[in-house]
Image (cartoon, rainbow, N blue to C red; front, top):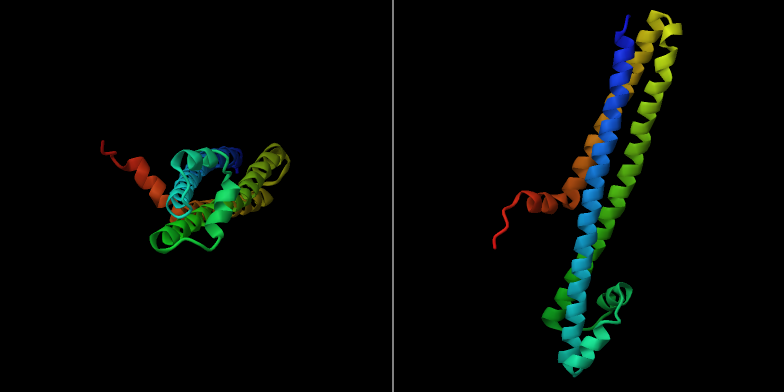
Length: 186
């Protein structure tokens, strides 16, 4: 079998280390974008609550703004869940709350696939690195079988990782990709 066994296992370990690094970059970028989106949605809820206080509850603007500074994200989300508001304001409140829930589901989904792919890809790296030093002591026929098993497992792990990334993009990542590649108009 020669040195091909060693080169292949080494290349597999290096490739999956790179896949883990690229996945981590993607996840960090995606989670930061979701965090920014959530902060923006919270700000919209805060402004909507302020608008409601001034219009419907007859607060003076200065008093309402002073009260606004004390609101937490939990308070605003609970307010958005509650009944109340009429017409356009109720619709806007519901839409914003739905966007926050979608963002939370996407963040949880990304975390789940990251854990799964890290375990799978890490297992490939560990298996490859474990088999490398023992290659000198294994006869050629079992060595070929081991290498084929590692390659099949690596192909499976790669397919799972690609599927996870594409699913994550499909669940809401297109907006982020559009923001990256769009030209901002001033």
